[in-house]
Image (cartoon, rainbow, N blue to C red; front, top):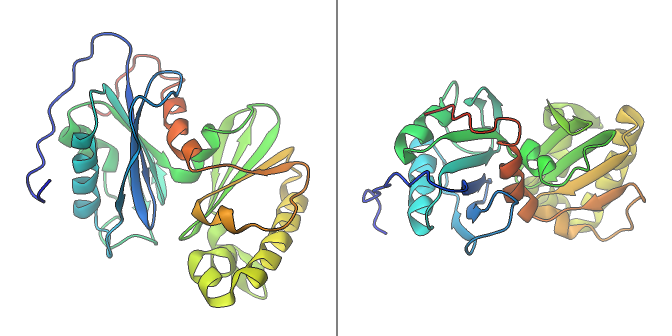
Length: 251
């Protein structure tokens, strides 16, 4: 589809709602239509995240992805930034122009269906946590995402920019730039150290590690820790609607 030719048509709302789940990452933007139980209804699509991924570029790509898929009645978006009530306050691993950007409202207007937007680590966690006890999700990708869950309810954290090792932050030491600069062996040693520090800090029952760089983990993880796939980042989009029933905010 040529850029600038996006034409999104409002879908029918009759029957069971289908969700277009979008996962915005620092390197790729993925999409898939899911049924209410999280079962994929079509093939997942992916478009590379552009350099200097401004709001205009990202919303255009999401609209293009929407046109690649079949019918859907609502949209969920996992986004790599600080958000509150659908408003983006920062997105350091994308481009300029995100401060106070009303992403949820803009997408709802563009796609003509209800939209819910949340931090990508929150959404990934919603797709994999058991909902019992204290659970922590971290994502290893362009940056470092983190969310704490108490009996399934998310409490977003911004651990990425907190001190971790020799005055450097978690993102400094475990983000994608660090992986490329330090190499896998040293990056893995730092990750093992980070897991130990996070366990002491939160005393969680379970830790879930997601994100594209989780595939580079080559050491044995503790029994209360497991790696989750990118699919959870899309499946968690169903959970964004779980507590809202048929309420269609963001129109």
